[in-house]
Length: 276
Image (cartoon, rainbow, N blue to C red):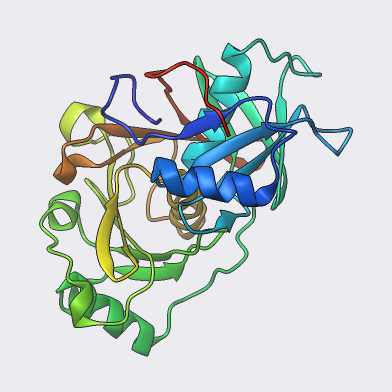
């Protein structure tokens, strides 16, 4: 997901027609795929929704996640799904109803309202800086960016500084940390490689193992709401993610009707049947 090039984005497994599968079976299958997320397409329970989705990591169910939202909608449409409305698609998930649109040929979702936002206190930021191995003086701004998975957003001066980070979770008790750096603060369209405007990296610890997420829709959604509202960057802009781990993630941020829209390309790489 979030790429037009096969195997250069963030994969998600989408199980279509999962109404006969219970939560325990879903979790077991998600653990077996061992992808960051596996989703299950179900008939909606809310009459306003076009479909319902449950989203699982290998160890837990999530109320919302970004790249599984784009990937699930892509799979639903590819399987013949037909939205009730001509101008929107409505996804039902644990977080609630998520509105999606097709903007410039890409599936885009309306960024949900954060469940936690606001400034990061000095102690939490100092701990994050230990994990990122940077001096607190290098931080331009920091904000909680939690809309389900839970992220701390850390803004650095530029994209190259973000790329240079060497994360060390042994240095501190860090949670999920999203690090961003515009190529030119306050100005979209003055970009870096391939016309991108923002460099994004997402670090987290999984069972004590440090990980970097290839492309993160939930983080990009919350970061966009934060950076646009605070005036650190303008829209539309394109965020690059996964650069340092050999991926080519691209997240397209736009604004319309007072909402932030998070879009990306999607490519089907595997299509078949599974027994659960």
